[in-house]
Image (cartoon, rainbow, N blue to C red; front, side, top):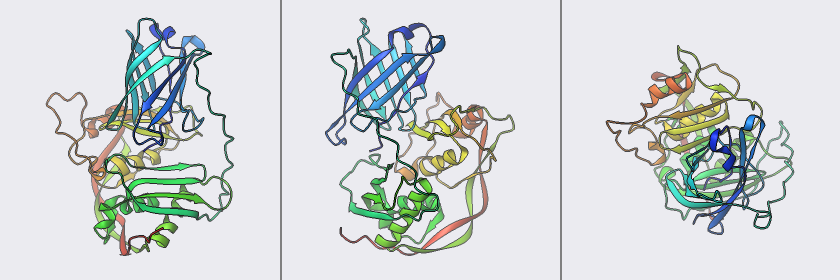
Length: 374
């Protein structure tokens, strides 16, 4: 399960005065440790009557994250949450004390009723945890402890990677998924792996050795070591000509907003098939996201862009997109609201995505074995 942690920053005219306050509700989620998660939306006004807010999943910690938008129109409330591929749609009661609606995350939906908390009914918020210091840049980390087990989960989209503090978790992922993450590859850049490497799924939990919180590159290094140790992975690299997607800047120029936050963590998430929200994301983040979740072939970042951007991308997917996630997009209707990805990415982001042929690195697997029992 991908972590439910998020929140909202937005501007709301007109009905905004009905939203400020602390709104709390319980999500009934079978995959959660206790079968449910308590969430709190803290909404307030800033200068010029603009709204700012944050959402905290209090059973998962104290961290709060910005969301892409919050709207309130004629008692209808809509909140879009980047980074987890989720969002809330609801309707406020006439007395302004309850919002009844639905939380959507990926392909799953859950009923969620939010109540305006009072000083007597407000839930206690978790104490803020001091941010751990980062691991030394020259560290050579490994997993101090790691467990690998076949998964018991059966839902295709009930999967994901988690990196929190010094702990790393994998839920319902194949060895192919692990390899592509660890080496920054697309599945098309692998050859020679046995069939079970894609079909059999695993749950993994590990903790870093040494001191400090690893960054993404250090987690990938640890994962490569674990694959060699527990799965006996060995390989060699060959250059082959592949059909890939080249990502460039369109002739009309960029249409994304440069993020005010150039130093924080990137937020990238699916709101559903054919809808991506990015906050404080660079082109490397976007390229990795599209290659890992959406496209059927490798993606090359040839934009030459630096810095971080905020954007929303909505399109009608075709039958080739999301196929690596085991999801088949439905046929596009004649009256589709959104254009194809290739048109949408130019109109909404000012980028161009096109298929080209060129040399690419391909990992040829020489050895790969199923892991030993823990």
